[in-house]
Amino acid sequence: MTQTVLMAGLFHETHTFLSQKTTLEDFKTGIWTEGEEMLRAARGNGSPMDGALSVADAAGWTVIPSIQMSAMPGGLVEAAALTYFENRFFADLAAHISEVDAIFLILHGAMVSDGCDDVEGRVLARIAEELGKAGRSIPVVAVLDLHANVSQAMVDCSTVLDAYRENPHRDARESAVRAAGTLDSLLKSPGDVHQVHRPTPYVLPPTGVGSAADPMRSVLARARAIETVDPEIIGINVMAGYAYADIADCGFSLNAATRGDPAKAEAYLDDLVGMLEAHLTDGYPKEETLDVVLGRVDALPPGSGPVLLVEAADNIGGGSPGDATDILGPLIASGRQGIVAAINDPEAVQACIKAGQGAEVQLDIGAKTDAFHGAPVPMRGTVRHLSDGAFDLENPKSHLASMRGTRIEMGPCAVIENRSAIILLTTHKTAPMDLGHVHSQGVRPENAAFVIVKAAVSHKAAYDPIARASFNVDSAGLCTSNLTRLPYKNLSGKRISIEGNMIG
Image (cartoon, rainbow, N blue to C red; front, side, top):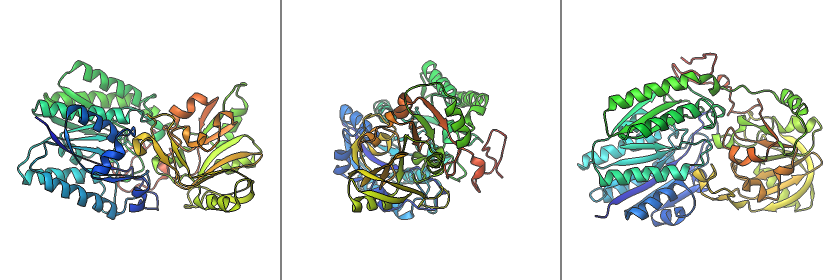
């Protein structure tokens, strides 16, 4: 018998300390598709929705496409965006509630909007309410980002949550395939499923939750081992959390879905909390100032490839504006050469377009968003390249594909060059998760002496293989790894540093 599945997506990682809100227009410049267009746009684009649809096609589901909305990480989402999604999705649910056999959702898990700290919990709770009113009991399965801040409502109002397991998120599509496969098995073999959830008091910065390093490495390995030995466990999620959402559910959490005894699953989560705490120190990495890092660079033995100066405080994939200059300015002032950087600066791009390719320009670059990301850097250089900023990912499993698919639109772009640096200027901030970001604009970071990388962990798959060395630099910005610098108000009882700093 053909199964009918209602599918939708709502994806945003919300940085509540940023003053700029994420608007309807931001979603329109990301992913915004409805109805049949959602299917046409997603199939073959390497995204989680593409992965879910591959299972749907193989299983022969009748898919009812609703709406997919996704914007790059940024500030608080304006209420109008959530309202638009809810109006479309719940109209579709109402129209088809008697015929759907299941609901499948592509979510992030760390979305915050005006008036709602738990967007995903709100959506899932309303789904449960509408299904209850209609007397329907059907599975609701959602795939989540590894950085989700998971609430009890999200767990209580879904059948199975299934999260990415790698950071960088090379497995985003794979995770959606796994989650959709779980839904298919629930449709073919109905039965009781219990989800258990374990929040922890720990809020870890993004630089401390790469899956190739502890604590994530050890906790993830233990979770996979449990799944291997207990066939009743459907899956265990190790949720790194998203530290820049000042909400009560912020932080590291664990949850599990089982067809067996929920008390046994709870015991597994106890074990995993112990594993986290045994490696907790590694979750709060220390960063050094630029002066200290440059001293270490000068002491390196000869080698090939660039030195990465990782600017986690302006981590575009974490929501920051991508125009910080706290590393770029001092690095140029130090007299260093061979610098490559990307700065999101639409104003500077337009000045370059007006001047024309080959022209010499005098610009003030970056730091135009707010007062938290440095000061504009004066730069005289030649406009080396102009483009529309569109490119295809070189690695279709790039972390960036989890947000945007494999076709990326940076908006109009310019490259300027002088004796010190080559700077890519973009109109839409674009996280450095794939070398196509710069290669498409004629920039070769492989040949640089220094590459400034605005990321925390998500760059590693692309940039680590070409690098001579890599250093995380302590700099200004609202994605700082030193969480004690941020004015949290809603994290009562949470720990934000290895020294034991507690909030509330």
